[in-house]
Length: 394
Image 1 (cartoon, rainbow, N blue to C red):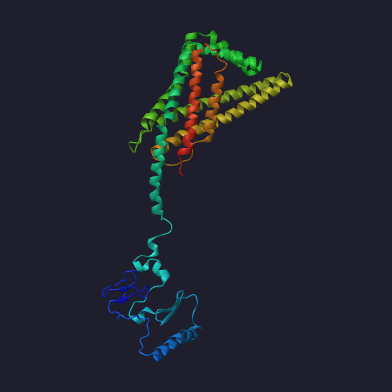
Image 2 (cartoon, rainbow, N blue to C red):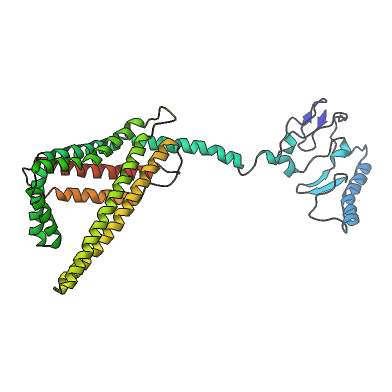
């Protein structure tokens, strides 16, 4: 039988490795069956003498090698004894076994045919890149589920209803009446402020023109809104989880419409700033009351501030469309849904809800338009908040 010096397990004569701990055994040496650690002596005197010799051997060996031995280095494999954490141990070569590695090396996996390099502590670059498709697939799935979410469907439905009802409101002539009603309500609350003068001018200009022409032009102003509604439905129906690639023409269509709308809005903002500057100059030249000049300056500053915020809003809306499109198409993470867009849409809901109040109770179409617009802003705000919290890398 072959006894393993590392664990003491008795192995068969043909065993090459210990069946219990896995250490290597020699094929050409077979133990006699006796304990290799027992003293092979027939008398007590011989045993005592040999025991004294064994006790003196480590001390003599330490004295001989002390000047040359480094305490940090492991004992040489050829020594008869080795000083280790477990005390004195016989050298494996004295009993016909191959020199074994230290306990630390054995548990490092070398005795079992493995090495520490087989199990790296940190993933390699290739392993890190292998996780990217999984993260992309997860983010893409989340984004597509959000587009197919009932919130998005209801928001698109509310926006479409607001556009259709708005066209109906203009065609029936109720929109012109709403301008006068709104002007009178604001005048009762705020007094005869400067901005209401422009509202009165616009109302007088509209009422003096051919009403058929006015209503036709008013209906044409809703064409961009109608096209955006079409883009929303394209986005909703084109997005699916059944195929890896989806058609993103709806996103592209919506983004192009918003860019064109942004250009038009920029011209309107420039015109507003120009009118405000003109009011400040004419008021100062007329040497009117200082209070009126102060109001004109404040109005100019407000217009400039609103212009900056409007430009920021459109730029971030355009980015938000690109973000959702990229998330749904490839799963790439290019940022988070802009929080400023969420804030503005909620502000739009508050303003639309407030605009319903001054309208006449019998203006059913006007009330429906305001309610649908408020519902659109509220639903898209909630959807954007959920999208921002769900579609992101965790």
